[in-house]
Amino acid sequence: MSNYATNKKVHFDYELLDTFEAGLVLLGTEVKAVRAGRAKLDGGHVVVRGGQALVVGISIPAFQIPNAPKSYDPERPRILLLKQKELATLERETETVGLTAIPLALYNSGRNIKLKIAIARGKKKADKRESLKARDSKREIERTLKSQY
Image (cartoon, rainbow, N blue to C red; front, side, top):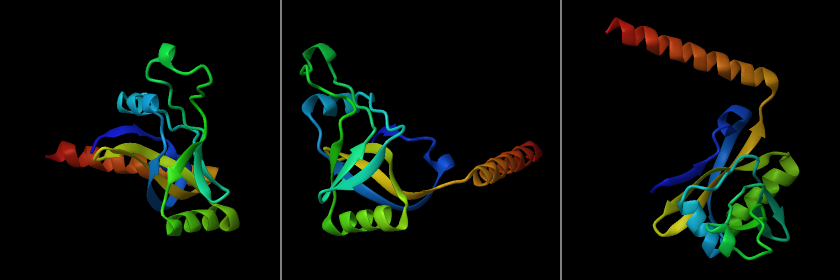
């Protein structure tokens, strides 16, 4: 299993509550571009419309731009393949509770390309400061322990 793209700022900006694994409906040029590591998950989120989950805001450029169709849009909404229970949970959490569904990582599972998504709650500025302090203190403890041995 190899990681093609990760959303690095997610753990800093959000508190992750639940994760799902979903398949993606991609074109052939998008599959090749993802495997080449050109996908960007920054700023993406998941919306549920008409009984389908769509990932919006991620960018997957065409593998060979001159050979791509003229109407190709690298930031088009892509359909997520989820089970009915997962789709219902995702819709309930994002609509009623007011949480956000965000993409975490793009990776392969066998031959298939999967997207790991999470239901998350946005952190406030004070929470972000606390996580920075905790990270810095943990780093300092590890440095002192390493220097002792």
